[in-house]
Length: 288
Image 1 (cartoon, rainbow, N blue to C red):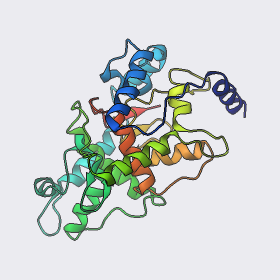
Image 2: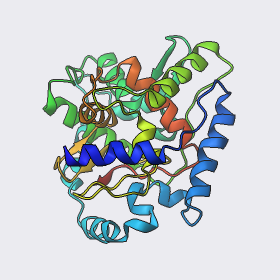
Image 3: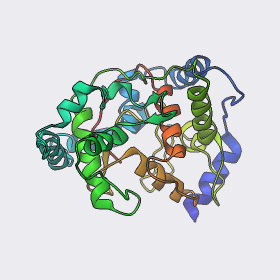
């Protein structure tokens, strides 16, 4: 309760909200990235992709993070994901065939917009689509089945690791009114207060970015948020999906969590990832 009171008090004093009026995505991108580059002028794009560890005020956390990365805890999970990716399906096909057929797209282009389905697609959805197309069991019930969700995070992490260091560019044509509407839904979600604590994403990752409330509560900047996922948090001890992180964030502010790979989190992922366009992928990663 003490931490919550401190957070609420600080937000009441220092709230620095960016405009949320309707604008085109490119203007939003310029404003969003410009805000953080002005706030943290010594931080490069590559360091923003490292989350809180790239911020100069968190040197102690950076030292611990670098030590953890000498033998990262996610290596076993990454090996599991690689083994699953390379295993042939019963029909002789493989994930690599799905890449060649365009069922699975380059990691740097996710999330992408599927014009035919009028849906935001992330790589997890396309991995499941590949499994289904080849008569294999999909990863299902991700909200309740932590084992299935973890295995999906592992294979996603392996695929993303092959694109590590490459720049993000979501494959979305905002001239499509349905794609633009999806972007706007994600944007609205990001800026909307929710839960008993009445917090929005910006309250922690804009207003409190670069601050430490004590009790191991450092706040990262919003720029670069999605570049490291799937990631392994120290408290979890295993790789997890970005949408599970969204769910736990909602839980922390005592708000309703939404369905894994549902529209709410898919559009949020689209907005957040587009705001990090041009930054390098760092997934998989260790996180606080």
